Length: 113
Image (tube, rainbow, N blue to C red; front, side, top):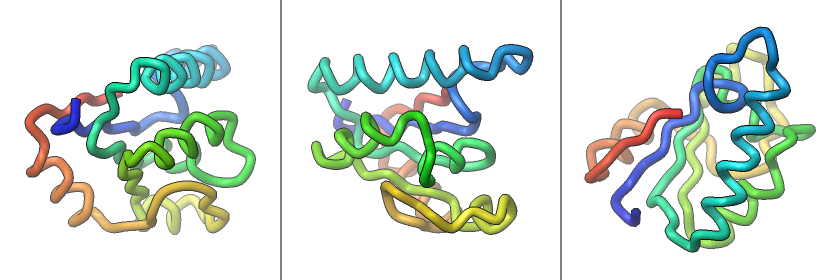
């Protein structure tokens, strides 16, 4: 998985818009199992609603911090943060679309959640 990039574009995983807590629960489980597998992607990129998972109060900060501590590059879209008025980023680095493109270009595989 070292040449894999994961894209997180929702506040959670999937599109269960009527049950947002399910989306967050699924993503938390996914990230926890990813940690347990010890098979880490090169990067996880967050844009659109996904950036909301990287700021203070996010229910998935713990596994994200653990992934970062294990060398996973976490890239958060600055335009999206600005659009949503978010400033308290707790994990990862704030970058631009160029950083997200660079991660994708280097990847052998891109997984979109």
